[in-house]
Amino acid sequence: MRHTPAPILLALALATLPAATAAQTYDVLITGGTVVDGTGADRFAADVAIVDGRIALVSREPVDPSLAATVIDARGQVVTPGFIDNHSHVQQTIEDYPLAENFLRQGITSLVVSLHSGDQPWPLEEFASGLVMAPNVGFFAGHTWTRKQVLGMENRAPTPEELEEMKALVDQSMREGALGLSTGLLYVPANFAETEEVVELAKVASAHGGIYVSHMRNEGSGLLESVAEVIRIADEADIPAQINHHKASGAGQWGWSEQSLALIDSANAAGLIVTHDLYPYAASSTSSAILFPQWALAGGAEEFAARVADPGIRARMEADMRTIFMTDRVGADMSRIQFRVLGSDESWNGKTLADYAADRGLPNDLETGIALAIELQLQGGFSAIYHAMDEGDVIRIMQHPLAMIETDGDAVGYGVGYPHPRSYGAFPRVLARYVRELGVITLEEAVKKMTSMPARWIGRDDMGVIGEGMRADIAVFDPDVIADRATFSDPHQYSVGITDLLVNGVPVIRDGGLTGEKPGRWLRGPVRRPVS
Image 1 (cartoon, rainbow, N blue to C red):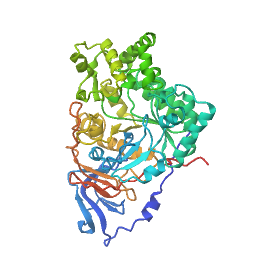
Image 2: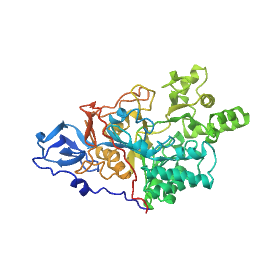
Image 3: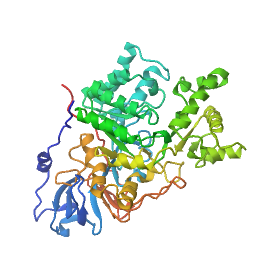
Image 4: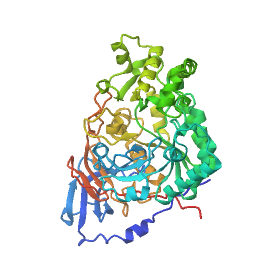
């Protein structure tokens, strides 16, 4: 299968713009900057002029500032397309945080909401068309949400009739503007789905011109099998596929990215379209549910408690947990599980499971970790940061030519909760640590991974490039200053270095401060030309 996104012809875009003449008044003029245009081409000095939300002129000769209503002095700064976040968790919070400040201050102008285990807005069109927000936002149809509507938390395959119900829900989501189908196969109840179920739903998305995006079934000991499953779905459903936050989790799997990348390359060489993205950290963040065999969580909290109370079932559960801890997660060191939110006692937020054990007079070992995980799951569970990855894999994945960048982040209020630092710093961290400090990719490569590549992937041929006729989503930053500041011990710190940020030609950050403007638009699907 070969995939060509439906193009938005540049000639048509240019035809809607007034000619740039001496009499032309521009809405915004960015002067004196160094343009990194998003294509991967070498940087160059140019002025950039904007009219009606689009780039009207990219001039290597100076443009008269008197021709513009607003002038941004970008001397000593880099001018790039606004960054596109491949995966963020804002489907339930963008209305509460419409300015999305923790994202804007990273230079992000568009958020792709690929859901995974989260619930999707419903009805999608009604929700998305009514949004008023600073960044652009696009949504997927969610497999987890769809399955819950029909099967709840049951651990079984759907009947033929139930599968048709699920397909009808995906069909409606796609008709209402979803970009494709998203799965979170690590989590209940999606984990209960066989590959065949996902293939059938992905076929529906494909028929509407959608793409398939997945949090894979296993990012640790089952990494290679999980990549193979994504490839199988791409093949059998005739759909472009994307692996979100590609990683090799668990010390036993460190270095496996070499093999997982080879699988992606082989799939593309065979004519499929399979891509991937990552966040630039060696620690993940998710719920305590991943410490348990998924069968133990079927049916919800009451059934979990009943299994724990049965000595035989509990013994089986603990045996499976030993494998999960040692192979896929943090080994026997509970200091590598850091609470984000412990709902039963939030005074522990930011501290570790080893700290919690020490407070009880318990050793930092595997058996303690398993016992406390069960105890806390019975009290509602927790979300945590898991320090279980190796930076060598992060770098290898980042350098891959098909890799894009994401935050996997949440819309957060400053000082609220205990987020993973990726919510505040993922994109600037790439530019600071991996471009400027380590030099493992160039600035041009990094910007391409953040702009034109994700724009093309979601079918937006008029985004992601500094070029005449393109949408004016633009970031201006100091390449020597831009950096993440959020850490695992002190996450509520905004990134620095973004001086100006425009969404659809409207400044949302000006001279380092938020303007309060909300010019974002819904990035409505389909991604490709629907199958007739």
